[in-house]
Length: 280
Image 1: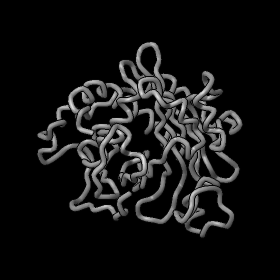
Image 2 (image 1 turned 90 degrees about the horizontal axis):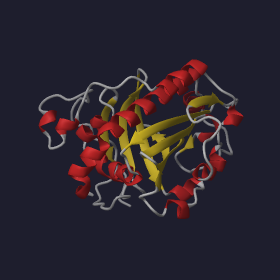
Image 3 (image 1 turned 60 degrees about the horizontal axis):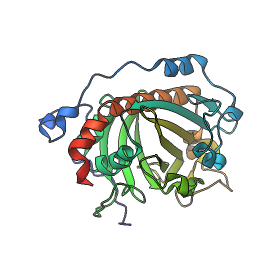
Image 4 (image 1 turned 180 degrees about the vertical axis):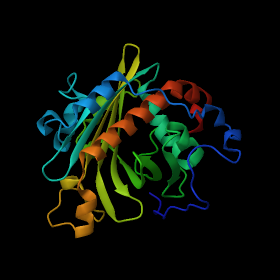
């Protein structure tokens, strides 16, 4: 793995497309109009926080690959330790799991690509290394620096992609990319040595395409100094503790952001993959 570098924002980041961005080879896919939230997402927001035992804990993430639906496929819960768990279900007609592996490998080298994914929230993207990587799962083992709005808050994140086995997922169940994939990562801050949580996007085939089952475990016991991964065995510094504690608004904002970006990209992912799918 190449050495990590700091984000290099050579100009002032901005939302949307400007200054000839639309002239890029993929610029025609930028669409500032986003569809309304799906009814099941609106219902989850109206329901508010739900009991934490209804959500699969990080330690049992592997169970998401087997069985049918979880008790809560879209919603959020708050832990007594200041953590939150967010779940989002996204139906994706005509999309295959392999398209998502391609997307995560393809988009991270150009902010203009990243903005296609969520035109109203994505601001900046850059790989943390200068290495040459190829292959449909070449994002694994790399870190993506991204600036994005979650709700009204600009977040500067470091998304470190890890093999599914790191989260306890049986990779034999993911051996056929035509049937399923799982994008797994440690979520950190790009400007501070803090890892705030974990994410999982499980994509599996359905009769009409695929469905994405996203899970986020953030804050509380999932946060740690970047020196190591896992549960904490010592108190966090006070400023880290404040950053690690999550609120219902944080959870709702993340739920909305994920629901918006995944549905928006899924609507044109088959077309952009058909045009640029050979680039990784």
